[in-house]
Amino acid sequence: MTLLETHGLTAFYGDFQALFGIDLAVAEGETIAIIGANGAGKTTFLRSLTGLLRNDRAALVFDGRQIGDARADAVVEMGIAMVPEGRKLFPSLSVEENLLIGAHAGRKGSWDLARIYDLFPVLQERRRSPGTALSGGQQQMVAIGRALMSNPRLLLCDEISLGLAPTIIRDIYDSLPQVTKAGCTLMVVEQDINQAMAVADRIYCFQEGRVTLEGRPADLSREQIRQAYFGV
Ligand code: ATP
Image 1 (cartoon, rainbow, N blue to C red):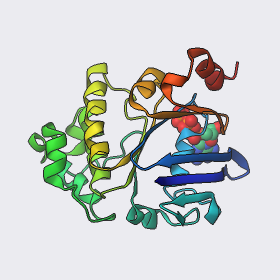
Image 2: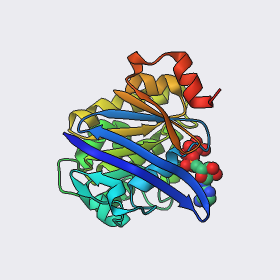
Image 3: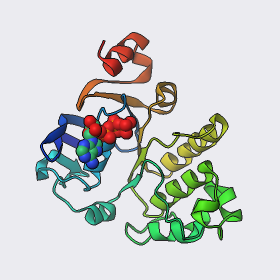
């Protein structure tokens, strides 16, 4: 079943056009990686999916419903959650409070505190610590847990490996199959091409606001990716 489709999706910041007609389709249960250089429009695309940037109604179809003009809170209720770039935790709140905020909007489902602590046991140990007292990797786990608390059908992750040590990145990526096994479709924006190729069923490469390549990692050559990424 197709969970998400975009049709000619565009995005503007004032007069500046950041996306030029993105057509993409994601099946339920897939893991998609979006790759591309700085400024290619990856974050803008995720923000367009979450209602933070509005579109024409028909530009975005989720579970058969046209939602391109839906508000961000309505989008969370429908089952799209985002782990934002830079984690954006509430610094004065504890780990547990940050997680509970994620449950405030969203759907009913099986993700709760106990399951998040099962996924990331270190968060249970640190549950009373403020967000700022955590390591970068632990903060990233809280950001993922907070998004999962809304029981999303589609989880969007923006550069979750940015600034983290390789072993921590591996721990976090190793946890993601538990998320997809629970029935959640995953879309990750990732600057590390090797990481993207390892985790994704399919990748989309963005360049200057357009999709320049799409396919299964095994079907794409390094040369194709280099061209799609850098445009040389
Ligand atoms: P990065 O890896 O740096 O996050 P990206 O692929 O996610 O890059 P975007 O952040 O989506 O790219 O940016 C796409 C384009 O839109 C860039 O040219 C960027 O300068 C511009 N842009 C992004 N946010 C804004 C904003 N709030 N106002 C104006 N222009 C913006």
